[in-house]
Length: 101
Image (cartoon, rainbow, N blue to C red):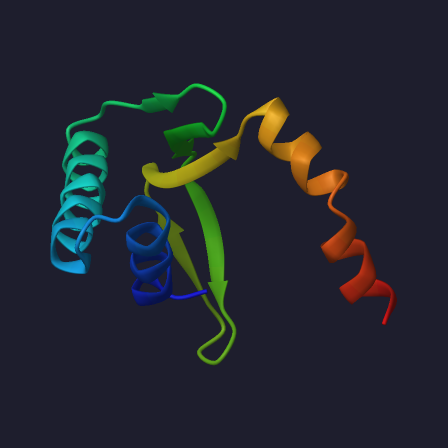
């Protein structure tokens, strides 16, 4: 499902115009990106958490040149779904039907 399809579905379910829904969705994504860039995590009860994960400094290999590369310590964005979200996906009949088919 694309962002445009999500916007259309929200507009259909709520009766709000697509342009207003699109602006809201874009604002949500901007808040998430800006907050995480500032080092803040975002917790949405019943949905999940957007967190910054720390990656340790490590030595990697450049296979084509056969050299070592040092990758500094850095952070990556990550999403951890809530227990209720995971349970809903595990118990979804539609997913089980598509996997079996």
